[in-house]
Length: 147
Image (cartoon, rainbow, N blue to C red; front, side, top):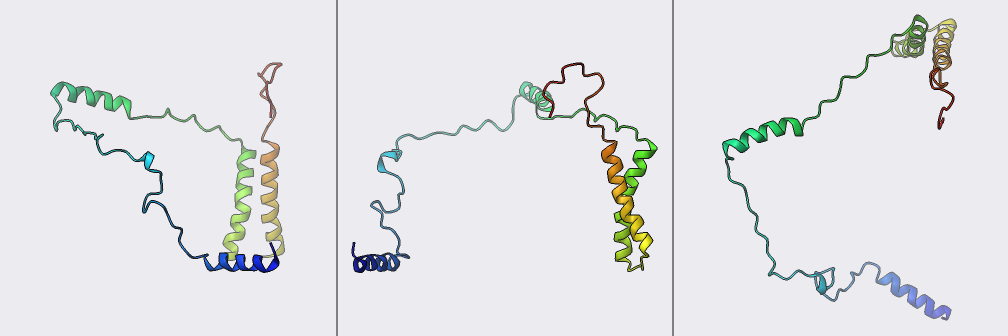
């Protein structure tokens, strides 16, 4: 193509950018071979309004058992020792103090800021150290796939 014909083609593309495409079949985006002939029809059969007494009793029993799932009660939470409780209080207490002090516009001394930040960091470190991510003691010699 010459540069002049490329420019002309480009102008035609830009000019026809907003034009809609012409279709062979008017409003049908699929081929005629996929049309369903009007002969096959289906009939919907609705059940009677009131079931017989025998069916009604069976449905109630089955409905209670079938559609309702009741999960088992969760296991109790583990008992925390004093060190773990203090670590959780420090982890949330330090930032909570800073948030309340900032919202109330309290004047905070340097030692109070240091104590709040140190409590947060100390609580986090204590919880991570006590996490115990090793294998359980009774797992035997083969731990399987340990990630």
